[in-house]
Length: 306
Image (cartoon, rainbow, N blue to C red; front, top):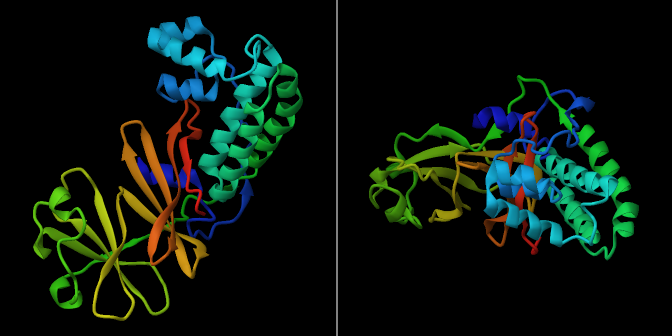
C-alpha cells in the first residue's frame, strides 16, 4: 500500500525520478457532487467542506460531528453556507488545494501559498469578499493540480535504505550506544539489538548509516547516523518511519529526505532538511485518499524557521 501511494504522491522534486513528463489528466480534478468525498473521518470531511448539510453529517457521523460542523461554519462570515455559489467555491478551494499539496513536486512552496490564501479568505468580513476572492483561487488550485507531473510506472524514487551491513562492530567504530530512545523502542540497548544498513545519501566528505531495531515492535523506529571523517557516529535523523526516500533538491549541500509513516488514519509525510548539523522537519502533513483515490493533505504543519 505504501509503495503504491508513494508513486501516486509524485513528489517529483523530492524523489529522484527519471520518467517523461506528461500533464495529469483533467479528470482527476473534482468538485463536490455529493455530500461526502470519502476521506474517512468527520473532521476531515468538514475540513474539506464546512458547509456540509447538517442532516447528512448527523446521519453519517452523529451529533458530535454536527457540533464540529457548526463550529467550522461559524469561522466564516454570516450566510456563507446559505449562498450556494460561495459555499460551493469554498468547498472547491479546500478540496483542490489539499489535493494539490498532497501531489505537488513543490510542497514547501505550495504549502506557503495555500496557507496565505486561506488566511486571506479567513480575513473576509462578509460574503461579498469571499465571492470576489474564491473563483480565482479555485482556478489557480485546479490549474496547478492539473499540471502535476505524471511518470511511468517503472520509475522508482530512491530509497534511503541500502544493503544490510554484515559486520557493524568493525565498520562502525566510534559508535556510542544506546542511541536516543533505543531502550524504549528496541529489545535492548546493545549493538546486537540493532540492524545497520548502508544508505544512498551522497554528501562529500561524509558517510551515513541507517539503523533500525532488530526486533521491531511495530514502532518502526529509524535513525540515520553521520560520520564526517572523525571518530564518532552521531544521529542526524531520529524518527518513526515506514519508509524514507531521497529528494533531488538539496539544502546546505545535503539532499532533502522525505519520510512516510503509515497510520490508522492515513500516511504521515515529513519533509526534512539538513540544518545546524542535523536533519530538521520543514513540513509535515497527513495524506488520505478520497473515493476517487485522489490524495488530500490534512493537519498541515510548516516549520516557521524555514
